[in-house]
Length: 63
Image 1: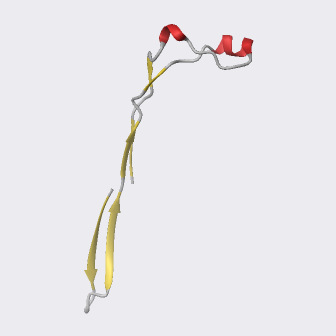
Image 2: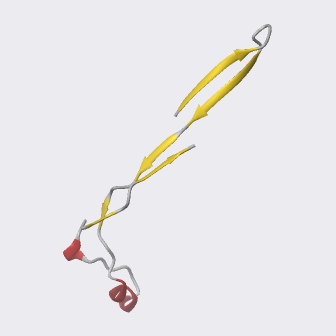
C-alpha cells in the first residue's frame, strides 16, 4: 500500500492524492478431497496418501 498527497492551490489548502495497493496470495499446500468417498460417507474424506501434495495457485492483484 502506498500513497502520495500533493498540496495544490494558491494557499495550499487543497490536495491531490494518488494511492495504490498490491496484494499477493496463494501458493499454500493442501490435502485433496476424495469426492467419491466423501459422497458415500456423507462427510469430507481426504486423500491421506496425497497429504499436502497439491498447491493453490498464486495470484497478484493491484489497484
